[in-house]
Length: 187
Image (cartoon, rainbow, N blue to C red; front, side, top):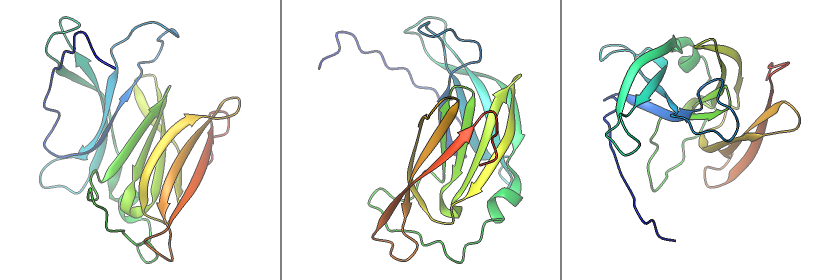
């Protein structure tokens, strides 16, 4: 597989990014081209342990031109309570060849943003509606999250698939699925 023309444009995101993902803007018609938004989790500032979730524009003058990050369209605090609230007693952190970065996974599908705090085993679910991430649910899996993906489920459901470090043996893995229904998001 070879690209005839491969263009690469880089843009500096932020020094304290803990996780990021691309998000399809609301109202995009199926099959139509679009410029994605970017979802970023980061420290609120250098002296704070507060974590914020931001949604930003990605700008480019031309399809092959340099990328720039636009204004913050929405920002919501994840806060310390969501980070520190999960018990650390039973969560074992595995030794991984690639290390444990990023600290937070972000996964997006449609208007759903999933934020996964890996070493806490906490899954936070937001719906991006009216230019604001609205928290619609959370789940503590109480195991270290090694990897994660998001996919469409049955009907209006969205599923988050998690590869978890087994609680009793860090060399074993467990696959878990969390189903999210937009009609009844209580995960």
